Length: 134
Length: 133
Image (tube, rainbow over the protein chains, first blue to last red):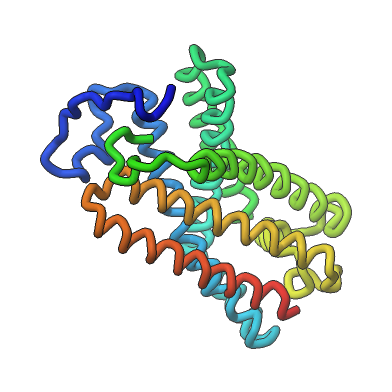
């Protein structure tokens, strides 16, 4: 469709943009997938900042880095890392689901694919939790 | 992909390329991450790595993470690719989010400039850290 031909429909705009963000009620599974994908994406960008902050210690020598690693082994941070694994796995698998749908594969099965993504995320996070707290 | 975007007035190929890039880099992350974890386990650690060591090795596989592996150019380039693609992927995501939710053109321009600058700064930082070793 050419851009010139496209007539924009009159949008039903809510009062605030933010109200649209995570309003998943009355929308269905796809809206949950979308909201979670955005949320996990933003979290991953924030993690990227944190990741760089931690790796910055590498430039201060091995001792500084080892200190940081020791700090990262504390239970609260391991818990956060398990959360990180969950966020990464969800974002990655849902990304695959989005790509399949963009390729017109399994569009009708998108709901079952979403629940598969959720189940796999929980499963992998549990394994990660067991391995990391071991 | 919202139809309410403020920046929809002059459609260019850029959005198409960005969309394509996000898909390609997304698949590459999964493949590269899987390869790293397998390599860390089967070749480097031979099952003897803790989960933390494994994660560290998998996503920044150069000398400081594992004494078994000295720093080398292959892993440096590999890490650089991984991290620079992650930064670009993430910053593009932020750009799309801004595009979706900021209606005022001037605010949009301002935040887009912030995103571009953050992207450049991150890329510089990544280059510095990866190639310091």
